[in-house]
Length: 274
Image (cartoon, rainbow, N blue to C red; front, side, top):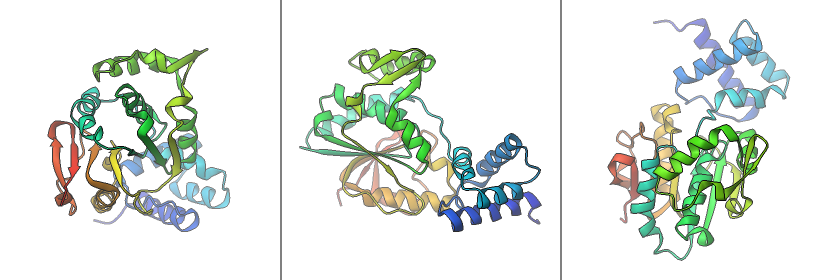
């Protein structure tokens, strides 16, 4: 079946963004990319995807706006509380045996998962021995993560999730309400390195003890998913843990044999010791 004009335009736009700015979205799931580009076209009032291509190539101020469409920035603190409860009850006992820990939050978006893990590690007495690495390709998302400021109307959901995850403290101990915002305590990010890192093109982070990358793989095609799973395998210490999203799987990856299922129902895997 012939490609539609729209599909051809999308491929040309993604090629142009890669060649000019080195952001590579060519192996993102095409249906999702198309949906978000059509949203951008509508919001910007363009008649075609080609007009977006022209704009982004000739006006560098367009790129950050385009990144906000192409990268999904939707999350919540302690999202899927049972995942965090499994980390607390089944993974943390293993992590306690290490004198120092490295945790990578890959595709950290606005930081909700990072702060969830930072609070969990503080509650479990692991914060002082842990360095967190929070990475994303979107500079605006990284700035938001570093700021740790969220609308106050989201706190009720965050608090419910935190309690369901087995939290030992009150979430309110970790933030200050300021008008309609919740500003999370800077102590939660003092041991965090925020960094621009692309899962598509960049190399492995070495010797992590836990990688949490949830609801990111679903936006990639099979080829890119395979690359990223291999990247996680290279980045984990032997015996380290990998958490992915509830709708994601390592089953089809050529690197799946690097991992064993640790908590199957929560999609938590462990890098094999051999």
